[in-house]
Length: 303
Image (cartoon, rainbow, N blue to C red):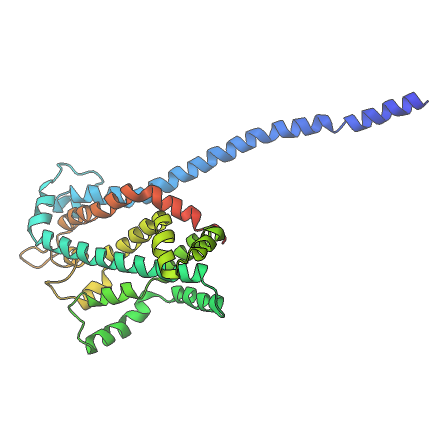
């Protein structure tokens, strides 16, 4: 009797083992299907994001008749490589490129330096009201740039800074809320023991920032430079509003001054110029992409 009850108990306890093994086996194909679906989704997104670039390259190789043809022709019949020649010679392409490079580089260097310094203060310094002030800085990210551009233009016009590059210098010295948040998260992840050892050795806060924290923050610095350079390089509204013809950037020149003798825009030449316009940013990103990814991952670590 006891033996029978014990055997029955063992059978009852052994029954769930079969379904568990079966359920584990049945979930494996589901996991494989979900992984395959994820790759298909990523491939679709890659095609979606690369589509405009591919369309731009095809448009740059079309003739004006093919551009205006109905129904639209996707592939050019005979590649018009002279569109790139016109893009480089119809306007002073080199001078406008130099203006854009100078403006973007100056702004990127300044805003990276100031944002790193402010982010270091929020991450490592102690003080009353620091978290409230940090929330105020982050709240400015919700203000669209176009909302403050007109008052900023009036201010710069009254102090005589229109048609100069000084507005971008001042914007760079004012730091960027997003980059401040990026550096704050990065510096907050550095161990506190490193800071304590520097204080014991008599290192001040500024010296600690320059000698210790900056050398450790190359991923964040390069990411900040890349992002701020791209923001300025791709900006159209601010240069069109604040700069004259001689000082303006390549983005304004591309959209404004590729015209035929009748004053009509030449879209195929504009497409060729836009394709050349992407090259510096793509080269910078390809060179710095590993630092960009590393910084994005690190900035998500809670300090």
